[in-house]
Length: 82
Image (cartoon, rainbow, N blue to C red; front, top):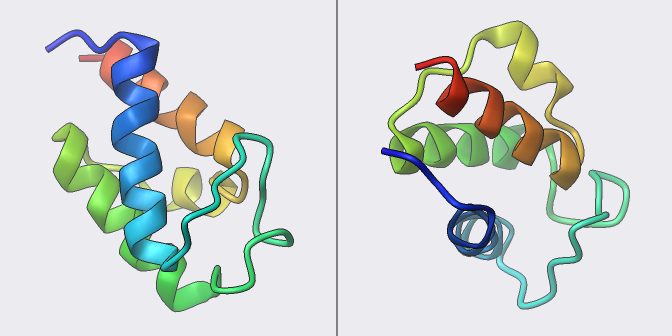
């Protein structure tokens, strides 16, 4: 399935809002700007992204997904590599 950026953005925002229990998501945010973003929530977010986009993120990539732009770029990488 090919994702357009708007569709990807909407799905990602939904995941982030649900995982971090917040109504405010800025696409420039990183771990430092979202107080609820700890190691446990990070793992939950990675799992939700994998399920939503039907991808399997390797450990080294998951460690790099510490900002919303990085998350989006990794999702696009995995989707484009299919």
